[in-house]
Amino acid sequence: MKRLLVITSASAALGVAVWMGAQAFKDRETLDISQISSPAGPASPTAPILSPGVAGLISRDTIPLRDRLSFLSTIGTKLPDSDRKAILDWIGNTPPPGLSPDDWFTLANDVLQALRNQQPATPIYTDRLLALWHDRDLDPTLRDYALQQLREWVADGDTRSMHEERPEKLALIREAFLHAATPGHADCDPQSTTTGTALLALDEWTGSAAPAAVRVEPTKLDEILLSHIRDEAAHRGVRATALQIAARRKMNAALPLARELSQDASQEAILRLAAISLLGTMGTEEDRKLLQTLGGSSQLDPLILGAVASALRQGESSRQ
Image (cartoon, rainbow, N blue to C red; front, side, top):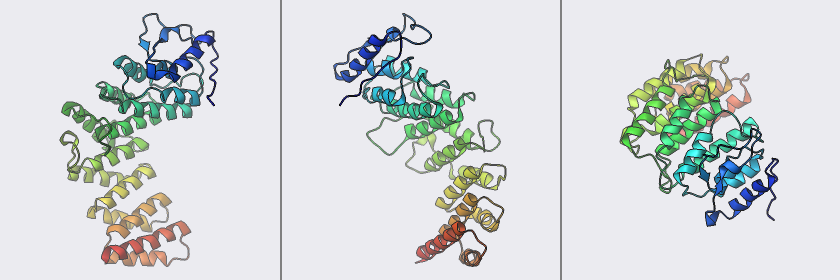
């Protein structure tokens, strides 16, 4: 049964028309967005004419998340440029009427994903996402989503998806991620999830499969990772992410730090777990003995004991 959408506004009839138009999106009917009401009054008469799904999605009427998501589901993958620009311009700090901040974050990420899948690729997508990332007044969650989408925009392993292919734009993306990950840079916040997002992307871009314009020298990333692991002022999640990447990269230079962290009872559990896992992945015979000693402690947290046992099994498996 189709759900009836009720729009509370002075132009309720037009709101219902938007909904009906969205359901008939395959006919590419259009609606003048200037006719959609809002608490602040009608939009400018010069506003562009948008497709029904887009008009409903970015409406200034009070519409709950489930119904905005319903509008989003109708937009397809071949939006005209005017629709794409209107949606990108709409992303910002202020949640649309009817949405909580958490609802807005959910919707904004889904919207950015939908725009990334448009065909042909959206030329202004890169610049708009970079602008969102560089806007330090923007909510940190939205800034992190912008970085995540940029990472996927470069390459996500899906040949069906659209990706940025212009070398000059890829170079800008690479620069943004390096700045976001490099300790001491103004764009690097060691207390934010954005740093972990940047580190994960840079790890991918050290490989030969990465586009040449974003490729990162492995030694450069190794230096960045070690800096974060050493930084006691950095967020535990950032340091743990750096340890996990170091383990995947088999970074011998991270072993002394992992040994120290694994035995330090004052450290947060997430850090000790990541350090123990690294020792299990690439540790020496001495590290195996260290883990055995650690696992023999009756005072150890059960979570840490489980990680030690797993690391020892992993070490045995790698030696076979």
